[in-house]
Length: 466
Image (tube, rainbow, N blue to C red; front, side, top):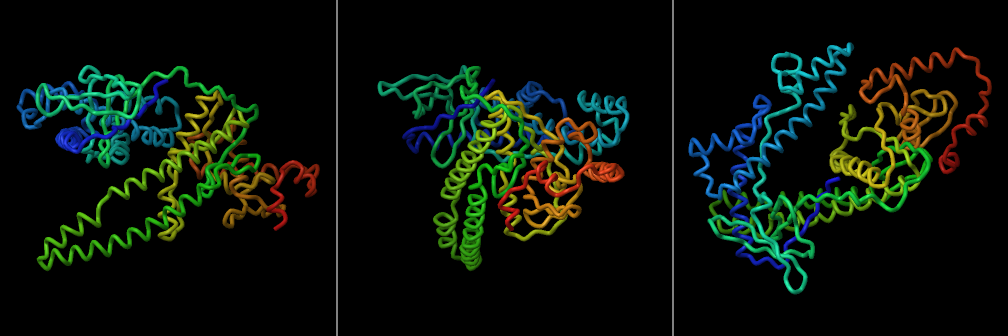
């Protein structure tokens, strides 16, 4: 298994950082050019070596102002990013193919055309590719990719590691002190942020399997907003997530309003001809350094809370069933600005990463299921109930459920359901739920008493008291 390690620069002087910043800026132009010319889905399959040879032949490479190895590695990295971007879009196209064609032979034909790059001959595939794979752009101008044979490492007497990478001129090296005693290896990615240099590198980590074992049960989990996860036992994990998101959203709202007022003062000063005042306001009051540092701290807190919650789930379960958090759902309700801002900061990606990483490291199985209508179906009668906030009411027997708890139970029951697969459209899921309810109501009810239902489907005591 490959993992990424990050080392940080330590006491790097301003002169060296300025040289690295200029090199990253020039390489950013190379990266942007690759995306501009080859980021279209129509250029699918173009290799980085072909681009390099063409630019060396027509003299384009002479205008970059960086060493050959530097811009060639940037081209290779940009082409890999474009390929990953296209593959992410093709996942959505494959889902569209599965929904459109019912016969397996038609699906297989479309999948093969998509895989081999012959999708332009199929009107449906071409339309889907244009919809899901846009012409990407790159604005990254703070990265330097260094090949493994282009840098040296050594250890000082205090134990700290130094690296030297090529500069803008031949035989010019830039030495960077790092805050680690472990020397980086392999291809390096240097990212410049707020006066610091982050050195990213990948290592083989076959020994990263956690010594802490997983649990023995099987749990369904539902992703929440006020908490990270709710399991099918009704336990909420990571309940401080909602407070973190709410506090950060409220801070950003106030901060952006104040920045807007300051920006308007600068614009008025510029229009009136007072350029010195406008430049002074932009330089001293509209910077991004503090905002980026706060954002970094916030993301670290969210990741810590999320991974702690996922570890708590894996402590209980050797098999975790969850929804596919990579799928996007568009709400039909019009929400307020504050709600939209908080939902925009929702951490589905972090939760999906944590579930996959922790389950793999601790030996727990992870299954993804279709979560359509999972928070609207009451587990007691298996019908679509009435949702009111985080409460779910059963319109048949009157039971009251916490919506996330009900969703976790339904997600657990979706595992192994032959009719509701992960690709089943949401409208078909609703039809299946209604059809199954009609079939159940025709059967004789052996014990329809409320105590029997409560025994089979436990309800949170706190909700019952209300």
